[in-house]
Length: 437
Image 1: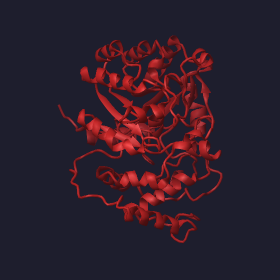
Image 2 (image 1 turned 120 degrees about the horizontal axis):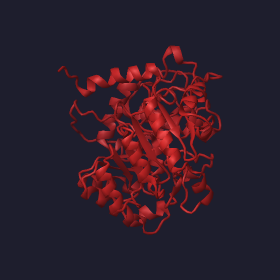
Image 3 (image 1 turned 30 degrees about the vertical axis):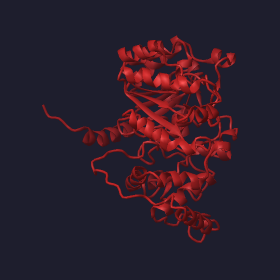
C-alpha cells in the first residue's frame, strides 16, 4: 500500500478543503458561565447567572447540532467557554461529539475537573486538553481570577489529568498582573514535561466593554517578552518567512475578511447563534430557527464575501502576519471592522524593528519610516536594548522542529477561526482561547 507522510499530505488536503469551502473546523462555546472572575476575560458570566443558564442550548439541541456539523464535513472541534465543565451535562454532550467522529480539543481552567471527569476523559480520550494557569503563585493566580481557592483547584485538576496520562498542554495569558511570573509558569510546565505557550494580546469584551484592556501589556512589554525567549524569536522568524509578504492575494484584496473564518471554520455561541468567529457577532444565524447548512450557505457565506468599503494602511501591509489585526478585533476595539487598531499596529512595527524585518511602504502609517510615531518606536527599542532585555543568547533549534508560534492565527492560509492549524486544531491557536480560559 502506498503511503504519504503527514507533512506532505496536509497542504494538499487543506487546499482541497478551502477550494470546496468545507467547514472542517468548528468552535462551540457551550456556556459563558465560569467559576472565576478573571480581570482579562472577554465573555465570562457568574456561575449562578440564571438567564444565561436557561438560554443555553439543551442537550438534545447540542446532539442535533453535532450530527449536522459532522454531516457537513466538520472534523476538528474545539469546546470552550466560559468554563465547559460549568455545565453538568457537558460530558454527555462531549461523548455524543466523540461518537459523531469529531476530533476534539477542550479548553478549561481546570478548577472543575474531578476524578469522575478525568476518568471519563480516559474512556473518551480527547485530541488535546488545554488548561490555562494564571500564575506560579497562589497570590498572583487568585489576584487575576478574583476567586479564592482557584489556584489549588486548578493544580488539582492538572494532577488528575497527569495521573491518567491524558494529552495535556498548559498555557497562560500574559497581562500586567502576572507578567513577572511568566517564565516561572513556563518552568513549572516544563518540569511536568508539558508543552507550554503564552499569549500577550488582549481584546475588549464581546459587549465592547474596554475593561480587559486595563491589564493589557504595553506594546513595549509585549515585544520584550518575545525577545526574552529564544524559541519565540526563532518562531517569529519562521512564521514571518512562511506568512509574510503581501497581506492579501490580488484576487481577494477588496474583501473585508482574509482569514479562514467562513471558509473552513465557524463558531457557535451558547445560545446556538452561528457566526464567523468567537469575536465577531455582527452577523449571526440562529440555529434554533434554521439548519447548519442554511447558515453556512447563507449569512456566513454572505458575511465572508463582504467587500471592504475603503483602503486603509492595513490593505497592503506586508507585516500583517505579526499583528493580529482582523475585522473582529477592529469591531471590538474601534467599533469599525475596517478601522486599523493602533495598539496592534504599534506592536507589529516594534516587533518588526526589533527582529530586523523590513517594512515596505503601505500607505500613510504613523509607525513606518518618516511616520509621526516612528522615532518614538526607535527610542522604545533603544531603551529595551539599554536595559539588556532584548539581548537574545545563542541557541540552536533543529530545522526539523515544526513548532511555529502556537499562539497565533494563520494569515492568508485559511486560518481557523477558533482553533486550528494545518490538520492540528491546537498547534496554531486563537488568542481568544487564551483570554477565556
